[in-house]
Length: 243
Image (cartoon, rainbow, N blue to C red):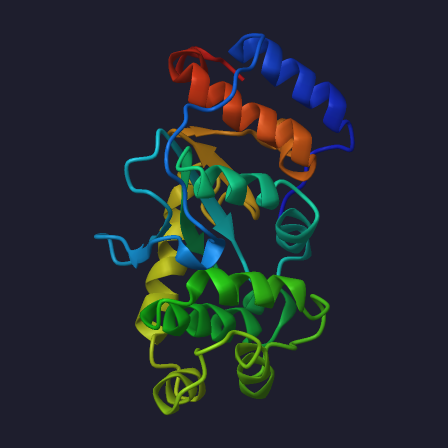
């Protein structure tokens, strides 16, 4: 996992100055009633989980490991709520690449089990809801807490998710091949400079990665919302920005 310094305001100001000043309201368009109504599907590459309007102007690719406590911070108190609002308004879509490297680093199999369970939830059309529940109830990183029993217990918090098929998929690691392929996709994303992967959480917006020194943006919800809006308003300036 990676984390920028705790100078969020300075980071936000620097990026927002680079992408241009001013902010306007999003164009009026029909949105989604709730997060549960957001479209979700597996991408053509077999590893990316796509959430939101596929035609949204802003694409946010997130690299996450379910056991990562910094991912939990982003998802529970950071910019995730603003990203969700942008998805509900059809301004943004999210592409998830789920890593599981922390099992090897910390020990255990919780990351792999959680990624498998998330894939099973996607099959039931419940990925968004279950993803939120897992991070809201994330065990300590040092504890291999994502056991089959705990994952099924948390699934019980998502209406309509528990079923004999889902339960069996969790217990039998039905999507083991997806888990492995997704981890490999994460590692490839790091390129030659980061052969073990780019770190979690990492965000790539419209094909431009937020570098680690600006990673504090992910944890300041207002700054992250401002960045998403700036990119929505003037995507060409984001493309030309040098961070």
